[in-house]
Image (cartoon, helix red, strand yellow):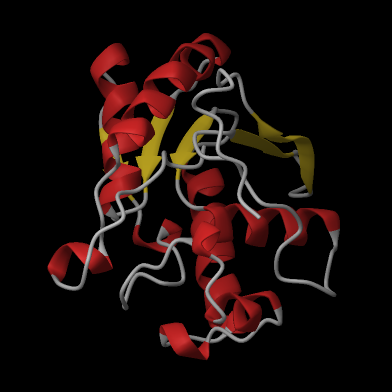
Length: 192
């Protein structure tokens, strides 16, 4: 599940790791019913505030314990967060596969995310793992599973949307769904 919409904040400590906006909280609350109805056995979240708060909404409704997984952090976790929707020129570098403005490389980011996903699957065989994370993380997994090697972003995940992946007994990953959302129109923010 992708986190809800983050706050737009100025420079400072909160700029690196913003909390959810009021709309982001409403997005996650609206999506929670479907996520809970679909079921999960264990709940993980990125260590970033927007993902932890989103997971917190699910945990409050289910009593699930949130397990923090560093490998689910977005590629931008070391620098000031910049909304993708703001259309900044720096995002052209991201779309070209250049993550150096964020202090990493595409290969390092992919390796970290895929290692985390494999570890979670190994730790919970046959169980449904809900991982609350970020658009870049979801794209790394989707690209890997679908064998897409010519782009960084396969699709723009909607805030509070879910994408489902399954690993079979032979260790092969499959896509079950991408970018599912049940958000009402007034909460829907479709990233560029």
